Length: 71
Image (cartoon, rainbow, N blue to C red; front, top):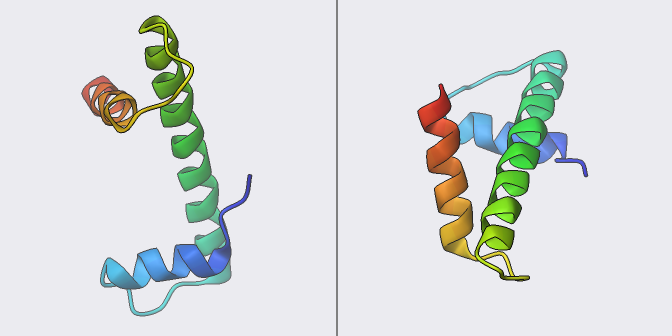
């Protein structure tokens, strides 16, 4: 899985960043990918615990909430 640098640049721009180096974009991409994988895995475990084969929005929302509480 790979998030494009352009997508990361758009996220940075929406956050109010006017200029960002390529190195910073690459680091941001790595962090976003790691976080997305973590949330997806937690969400999948939640769905499996509920005896479902389909990942639902509520699974992702709960996984995000659990990730935020961990910090």
